Amino acid sequence: MQFVTSRSEALGKLNNFIEKDLINYNSKRNFDFGVADRSNVSCLSPYITHRIITEYETAKLVLKKYPFQKVDKFIQEIFWRVYWKGWLELRPQVWSDFIDDLRGMKEDNNYIKAINSETQIECFNDWVKELKENNYLHNHTRMWFASIWIFTLKLPWQKGAEFFMKHLYDGDAASNTLSWRWVSGLQTKGKHYVAQSWNISKFTNSKYKNVRLNENALSLTDKREYRLNPLSLNYEDNSNENLLVFENELNLENQNLKEYKNIYLILLSNQARKLKLEEKVINYKLQLINDQKKRFDQIQIIDEEKFQNLLEKNKSFDVVHPCIGENYSYLNNLRKKLNLKLSYILREEDKFSWQFSNKGYFNFKNNIPKILTSFKLQ
Image (cartoon, rainbow, N blue to C red):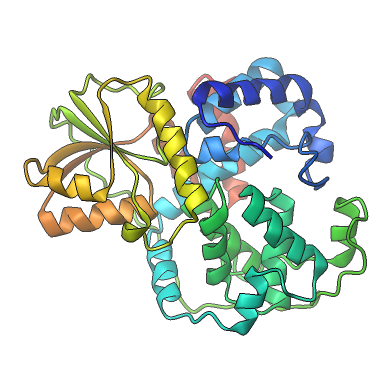
């Protein structure tokens, strides 16, 4: 599989999918036909994760071609990412606890066998290899993988979420963490996803048959409760001439931004990350960033060391809100430590949509038409 590294190419992929394959998405989306045939899914997630293209412009281009009723499943899948982001924004402690949990977890022999494709489960071993080689897995396969990891191999869900983040080009703090929690039964209390051999056989076109799994597993439990927290970002316009952008919010074309003298695009190295990324993933991010730099003369690409040097002269910035996750945690820690004055810029579409992330996805889904109408996406 080849993933492109520029906005123009990503838009080309989107338009090609809309013209050729989207019409069959509803009926074929759950099938994993293998690396050689991904025509039944869009494979747009690496671009949307970094917001080279956004969920909203994706929806707008789709609905320009088809009425909502014909592509409702695809639109809903696109908006799952918006929902998960909003859900985590309103419950940031979930991310903090996930990171804290990982600190105390050891990597035992069963874990080592799992990440090296040495289990007794053929399909799982193949998916580990595919993930490492292609930095991508089909969404349905991710659910099977997580279920096997948690309920059959009995490994901590946190280590599985960490493993995905390390290798996925589309690794997203909200979508990844909360999807693993959902499979385990922690996201929606008592509702978990248990992979079934018949289901794997059916949706891999019988590639994998008679997979021996724990198909009667109970949901995981956790005594921790997470209450809703209102968004606590400073949106004051303090007329900064300097803008901070992180690699998961690269789309500046669709932002109502004033003219900035300097745009500092920060890519954290593994030394500054709580979750270490594979070198291929870091390099992929850098290629996306370099493409963005071509369109904005004032962009400077910096790492955490250069950013620290910058903070010796300036402690006031506008910031494109990087959302709860690695980048936000890094910046927020510096803000507290150095008393930085940060003014966050949040997309109006996100701000509006996230209000519907206060409950389950069913409630959010019912409000998708309102989101589409409010921003003239259909």
